[in-house]
Length: 89
Image 1: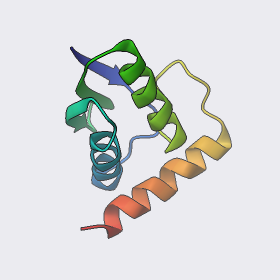
Image 2: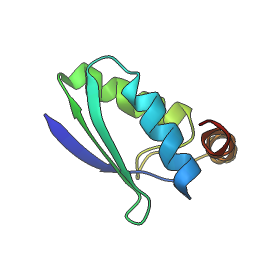
Image 3: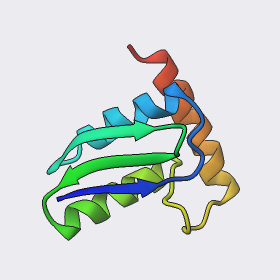
């Protein structure tokens, strides 16, 4: 199945790179695409558990789905994830 979700705190290509790299390493998640203009992430998944794992990871790295709580610590984590995405080749 394929899904597109709107996320919070997406700012730039560094964020995009981190999201693609991290989600692509989750079992049963594939074909990850990030659109920073629309603040969306699209990916293929197999089961609802896979989708829940992807949502949990997004939140953990600072990019919760729109409608979920977005604490200051989550926003700070997104800046760290962004910086990591800019640094890694």
